[in-house]
Length: 349
Figure 1 (spheres, one colour):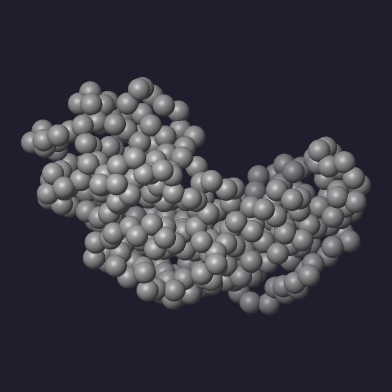
Figure 2 (tube, rainbow, N blue to C red):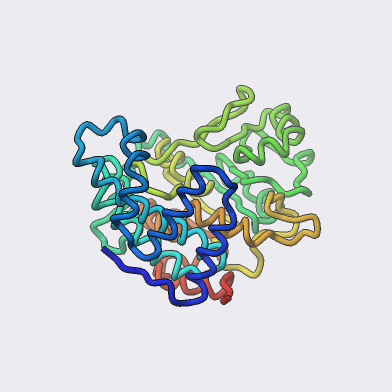
């Protein structure tokens, strides 16, 4: 078992902020105690405090041995909390050290399903050639069918030029100045909105749908009309990570058997700006600046390392074309990417 002493400023601040954050309820009082005890690996006291909780909470566990093994999971919870804390602070390396500790503990103590999820996660972030992306391409219906996907840095001019070249154009949250009135072949257009964006942009979505433009959304988002289509989930469950919108779209296209995909305007957070000026992100504040805390928290939930590795494997395995914004990804290692990401968005306390 790993031993993590609270000796530096960031460790102390993590405990200080998390102990102040919770509301005064019995459950949160127990969480505070668990965090304090886990910080110094007091396993015996953790087991005494959480024994009734785990025996009541894990009804599905048939053996007492399984229940006793699960009593060490509060320490995994402690490391996972630290992962989010450090990520929000821009301390990306420290965040992944904590997440790795959490993964090892859960893998050692958890049930077979969780172990499979962790193994799938590790396959994606692995750099070995044997660990391919876990989705097999479906039967190709039309070997010449081409789809373009447009991200935050794609221009309206690029979209217009692509109308004739591609059979389908998927635009992830069209910009506020995007105008369809002068575009031909609107039936080729597909607009992507996640659940929160679909609530914020109901009028615009209704306008697109009235012009026979299809709306694509996340796997579990409720369909508002026949114009709505859901992306497909990954073929295998993943532990403590989830694909971003782009990955979900590529995953769906591959499952459908689309042979040719090209990406426009995606730099995966390595460009000068996170979002272009007219991109309608919910993370933008009234002054137009991005809320960095929520930006980093969102990427922590999705797991930026997992998504970088997944996108790289998708591009390589399915020979997906990219424009100049994402040309670097084929040759850049995950290690280098994390270093650059931390330099770009990190800060020291």
